[in-house]
Length: 373
View (cartoon, rainbow, N blue to C red):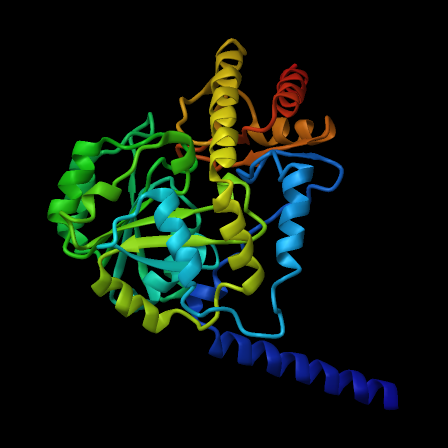
């Protein structure tokens, strides 16, 4: 009897909890799925656009020594003054442009959506694109409007400009190069967007290290342009540092929604150390670009798929067969890449592979050939 009573009470409590969840959690969030990060245990990890190379043994020891000097019992510098000075020097950022730092570029995107998004506000982007754009829009109760790219993933300027006129977006998001397609959009069309958009235009240059094309020089001409970058793709994915370059007036507003101490002391120290050795990091990016070209050349000779030219550190593949089956077979051969397959969309039967070291790339290509047999 006691056991039955406890069971009944437990059932009522679970029912009340479920009712509370559905009543209090916004419908947009209830309908969402958490960002999926598959386990890579025992697999060659080529799914997340990470750098294949850590610090050398010598640099790693120097870095660890520097970290040992950090007073972690104290809060970090809330303004990251030393880090910003180092970033300005490394990336040649003019003093007229402000720098806002985030825990990865994801946090900066969320800060932007908190600042200008919300109910009745539109965040607009060409699609397919970085999956966090619609995700962050939903989290902040903003409406996300996607404007389809052409079949070759190029920008449909006419459709995008029409969508801007129709929806009057608070923010237009342009990944440059685009993720997952890897291409840089037509600069002339982007300039038309900058001239006509009623709100912010964000150029997300996460893969700048691998294409060296940027809209940083346009900041002085367009005060509502913001340039977003990250160090995650260049070897510091585990530290999470993103930077937003913008007019000081926008930076002043963003600082109001930035959480205090969002860049921890160990990250600040590590980034300064990294930037002291920035030329070595540039050489690593140049190596990845050379590997990307070599992998692309071999993929174009591979029957059963189309490889799209890329200016990032990954390559998009469109298969002539079931991509989910090939993705599973690749894992059986010890290789994890990104499964982008979405039926009846431009990404139907698409996979995306990160460029790794020469040995890793050879292993992937061998596994791909076996998986397509």
